[in-house]
Image 1 (cartoon, rainbow, N blue to C red):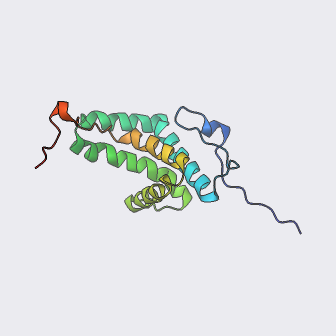
Image 2 (image 1 turned 30 degrees about the vertical axis):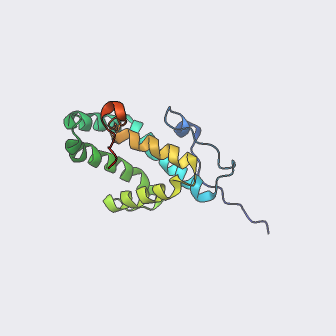
Image 3 (image 1 turned 90 degrees about the vertical axis):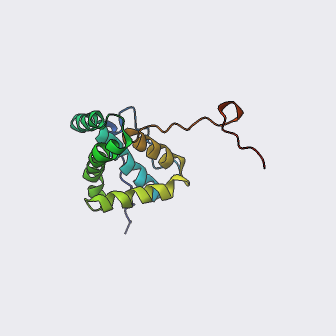
Amino acid sequence: MASASVQPAALSAEQAKGPLVELRTPTEGMPFWDVWLAVVLAEVIQAFSAPENAVRMDEARDNACNDMGKMLQFVLPVATQIQQEVIKAYGFSCDGEGVLKFARLVKSYEAQDPEIASLSGKLKALFLPPMTLPPHGPASGGSVAAS
């Protein structure tokens, strides 16, 4: 009796289209869980580009006025809801705890797989403002005098 091999879920050609997602095929040496997580991340990223979600995010960003406190108040809840809508299909609970578990899982794979790290960075860029570091060095007065 021949056993059927189980293939990990893959994005359809329609889902894989788009500027944010460049997912390599599962046969390129990625372990199953890495492939699975990359697929889930890609679907979450695609969900942010859906017209209704893009409008929701734009409204939340407009309400936040580039204020970090307001970003937490307006943008983060919308981003969380969008993620919840996708990850519930993969067994995560449809609440804040499910999103936190998903985020922890992604974080645990980032160092092991550059594809996961790249997708994670793209996801974060969708709802977190870019962080600018203060200048350092002698010209900026950022050096510390030796004692």
